[in-house]
Image (cartoon, rainbow, N blue to C red; front, top):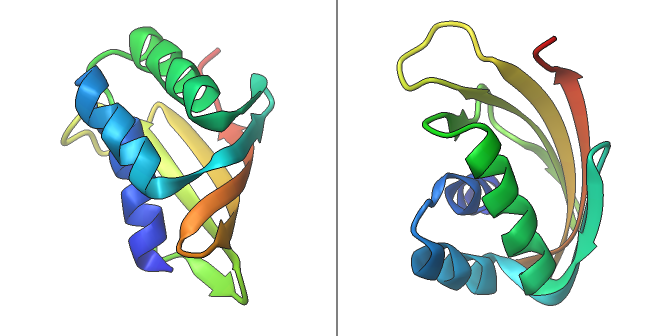
Length: 117
């Protein structure tokens, strides 16, 4: 499931709208849901719009995986960091749980562990 987490973060890091949209299609099922404390969306359009909004808010920052995902059956969980490239301390730390269906993500439940004041 490490591949799924890598693909997932690649979507979040892709700033070119056309390339991001292609990555979303490769990574998420058509009716995938995404839910975190800041919003809940469904489908490729909703996910794309949500990610574009986050990128606008945190321009120049990148998502990274600090450790390997933990997975079983069709579930994976992993922590992620959001920060400036090369920074030692992330600005935001989160934790996501994903449901995988036929090799693509069908649901994401996100949690925010550290957010800026």
